[in-house]
Image (tube, rainbow, N blue to C red; front, top):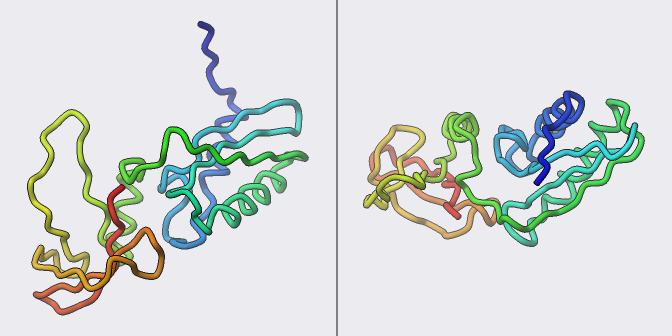
Length: 166
């Protein structure tokens, strides 16, 4: 089996595509979210981008595609193809540590992480991004977007979004 490493240009294009802000959570980039899966230079000025939505039917996929096309056109790519790739499926484990930090700073409880090689945490509590308390209540399974739930902290009484685990 022959494996190829990405060229410096492909790495640069991947970084550019990843720098696009998420249309629903502009505090995150697509790289933070982990949805840009790959970039392949097909010919001079022609690039293929693989994009995995956070869930099938995600309404933001069209905006992500358009924004990726625009940033790559602005950097000399005449022909940009953004393909939706559903396998492997996106998971909240794909959110980077930086992305989780940004979510919490923005007042959104990040999804709980479940290490693949360690024990699964038994706690089902969600930590309030405002005061850190784990005494929180679910108000609604859906919030401003389908990937978030609305919760309220019993300690500080502040409502907050929680990015649901997938």
